[in-house]
Length: 599
Image 1 (spheres, one colour):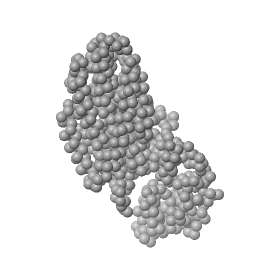
Image 2 (cartoon, one colour; image 1 turned 180 degrees about the vertical axis):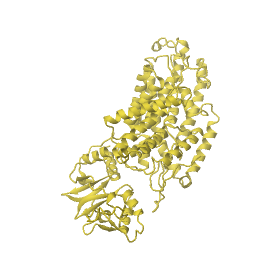
Image 3 (cartoon, one colour; image 1 turned 90 degrees about the vertical axis):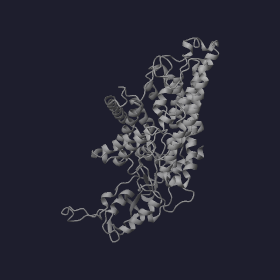
Image 4 (cartoon, one colour; image 1 turned 135 degrees about the horizontal axis):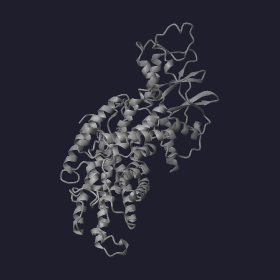
């Protein structure tokens, strides 16, 4: 199986990789850009953080090739999450062709939002669901004009899917089911129960994934050789899945069989797995098969999520939920057939031998509820399920179950699976959906600045390159790879040079040991006569007007600047003089402390 791309220039990982108990003074900076689903990282990038190489051409090619092998291997993973990442890569590469988007981070983020939504539209064949996914999950700031552009992008993606016909069915949806029998009123209680079970199952999956990452993946051999973990997971998957007719199937085909109804609305091969009982005596055997498959798939999904291959969680979580929902559906069906004279059933038990209860409906509803518990998507999921079935009759059960699932999951585990990945990888992500109540101001967060973290040009605009390199290393040791160094003159902020730009400029110097770097523009009489580029002139990399707030600014304003502008750092001033700088990581840490205090 192809090994995911690595990038030695960052210390972030695209899948959970807990640190050793004994910290290494110089830990290896390994970053698997092509591993995992990539949705959590796309969210972080759209919030303004920089993950170098994550949306590049190399990552796109490697993830495309590796995804083919990982999906065809039969592991308990999906391709839908990686589709979002690959679509964002295409959007990022396309931005490089136009200077309007290449030089404007805000415009670039709008394109990436639309591209990520198109990825979901292609994955599920649900263009409306893709638009809502962009609005509900990945987009950090979603103005009205971006909504229309995202809608246009998703429609074009769906039309392309229609013309290419990858499934050979001349339909854009991954699979399509039709329910001809309407639901009964007494089933509302069953739907609510499915929502509770699905939400609880999704929340428990998050807790299990966190426990697995903190125990098994802490082993030194697993941390050092991540492909050995892939081998073990593939071996266990093969040994456990071979003996069960359901677990041997690919996840997408298994989900289709779990959601298919037991009537004449589907083709003749609908019951090739024996999931449709002919009488009440067949139901216990079906339940036994479903329970075994549920336990196997649940375990395999937990250990597979987070391995260093391209892998999504959408379809595997839906399959586990579908198995659970199908069990509930058959139990309700058995109850109706066992006591057909109960008045609450009405004519259900006598209508077509109990087929008024559709276990496939329960399977699809539970699949959506479990995915909601894992990802905390709500409106998006209801629309995707509607687009998969095309049935207006079941919009209400879909929506009700997803609402109950979200409430249940939030009560058990407040964080979604993407919040878990963001926290474990220490990404500076501000969740704009959960804003704490701030009562202080910027002075409560800012610490006294140190002279080694600024560039003072009071005496001369020339600064030794070795001195700049040492200041850059201080930022790197502090984990602020995307930070910056303020430039002061008489303690007045006159500019700021971002750390990545400073590193690039220093790397261009031929003799760093003796070079003096120009940190401020100096008027010259003959500057128009010489068109050559001076590598020691760092003024093109300097931001002459960095965002700065007074120390008395309320913390609410600081939060809005980080969220709405996508900033990575904010400078602080006091009476017009520089007083310090707050990095987004520091503010995220402060925000989490406030949330813990308020909870």
